Image 1 (cartoon, one colour):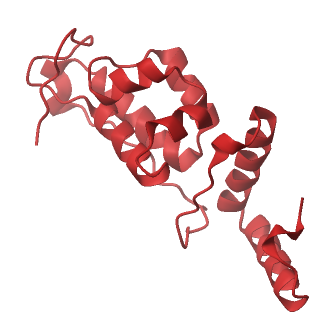
Image 2 (tube, helix red, strand yellow):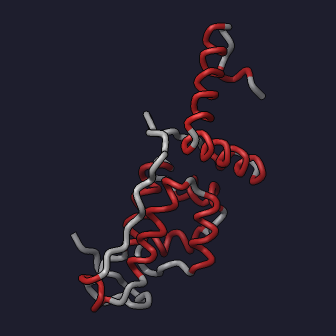
Length: 165
């Protein structure tokens, strides 16, 4: 299903063109932020009106915005947005001949379940630490193993998940 962009067209976009970034951003917000633009905005620190217009397909973000999003989101969240951004910036007449996609992530630890953390409730510096830890644990098998050992320790000793402050 194609969406028609309304209002001012983004560069390289025609009247019947799909905004890949808008579609991917909406999917990310629905999947990882419970469909809440407010939760997403708090997590990434982007202006609400910009996010709203990007979701509506009225604008495509600039490179600096995409860079900021890539730094604030996990790799698994950021890569599809970057791919969509690049697809939107490909000239329309070349789109049928150009394939833009992410490289397969070799060596990644498979994710067993979707981790949902409302990062918006943490100060910015804590968000960065939490996101860094999640990135390490999801990309390094030894770090994931260490996390499993800690979880088992907590279970064996009857410690609550909330015991760590």
